[in-house]
Length: 210
Ligand SMILES: O=P(O)(O)OC[C@H]1O[C@H](OP(=O)(O)OP(=O)(O)O)[C@H](O)[C@@H]1O
Image 1 (cartoon, rainbow, N blue to C red):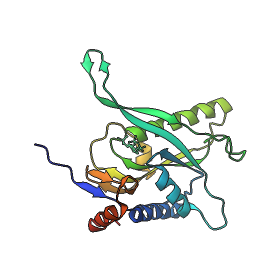
Image 2: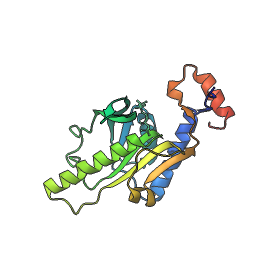
Image 3: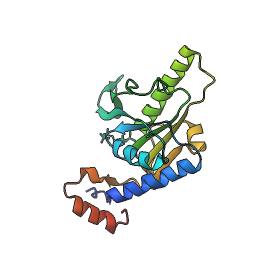
């Protein structure tokens, strides 16, 4: 009989502080992003919180864009072998329509991609590779290859486990992959899923994640 996996409770306070700490590291490196891209749904709350701490007094808010990515179980047949994997479905993508004129693309920008958890890395791999591909195509089309675009990934939690997909090696080596916490491969309980937020917060405090 398999054991019930241990649950790891995380409070809103804890999330707030993780965003604040990460923002400080980003600002200390002088790498304030030009745009934040939250991966919907779990990336939206940390994206909004970190924006507060990335904003300097008197400056404009950093725009937040949302992209919708969902994982679904693919139970298809690959040749004759049955495969069980996870596929990413794109439900929403960037829209610069209502932004300033200079925000016509991501070319030359510092971009912060935010999600709550890096589990198998499938979603982040998809987001980074699709965004990089899009920028490269636009640069070619507009003849703007000399502009440097920087992608940084921020997650609250990285599960310490073998990943199904990779992020660019230079992103990891240059410190542009930022996980506020690396945690064991446990069941992470985020506060937005709690039926009883008081009990949830109590458990998070007991575990020291408050
Ligand atoms: O590292 P991975 O294995 O790709 O898993 C991480 C993704 O899984 C969750 O998304 P989900 O599709 O469950 O939707 P949600 O964000 O709307 O909860 C989470 O928000 C991440 O985006």
